[in-house]
Image (cartoon, rainbow, N blue to C red; front, side, top):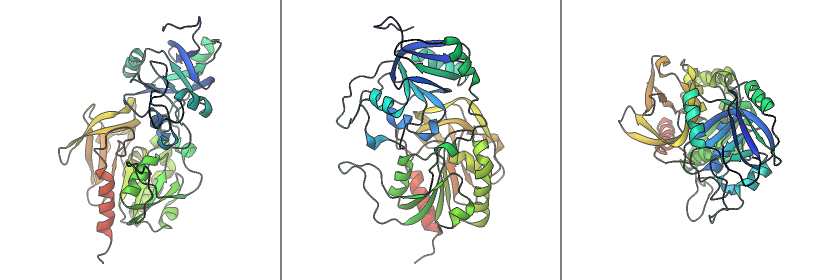
Length: 388
């Protein structure tokens, strides 16, 4: 248990097995229940908290310096934080960065997200690795009054992410156009002026930087909700289809997404590119299976091998489910594999420009080794068009 300036801790993290972690609360007050995961990235806490793929999860940050660069509107990956809460080792310090517009604690409080500091995150991370991602209840009370029995009971009552379709909760309400490109010094975000390809992006919880990467690769992007049908997609006469990242159990989301993808593949030869949940949706549509991982992959330092070139990329990852590489049917080739645990990280169809990866080539946070995948998507659409 951490040492406190006051006589009582002001936040409490209760695991379903009865383990209790005390700490100092910041951000919003109240209580939330979720699955607990850990993220090993050294930067990007704001982008992580606003990544829709973290819906239903409390994030433990293994890097201790969280909050030291503040927050700013440009780094949000969606309009509001989606992760249920955060766990950190040290309390956030006063921001020290020229881009900071607000401190982390105030931002979390204003956005209704609970956080706890002063926790032994090394011990907590080891527990997650050994036991699997636990269900937890996180509470913040400035007076330090906690009903531990009720918190443990709430953690045990959490239904878990298996069987949960969370894409419906985080997808856009209606379609929209996107033309903003990646941030670049000194102009920041700029608008695309001469797109080469029309792309429909299905939003299962899309990060803004994925859309920016598509725009930077020459795509005129129209974003459709997760429930879009094949007819909705084809009505835009796209040159390519993009399947975004997102949260929840792919098998549950696949109940309505898989038929759409199969109809597109059967009725069109357009290139298809998927990331994260989009990768899992494509795999299911092609006849593969997905599985729940013990503790998932969450971080910006994951080595992935391209099995076709032998190249190793350092990638950003955020997923708790994975495609079962042993279940890939004939005609579907495994292209990438994790060098941490050998899990599947990429597939493609043998005879068509249809491919996907489990990791996040847009990074944010993380390395940019894999931006070429967006350029490959653009090249595939160029190759499909008739010569002028």
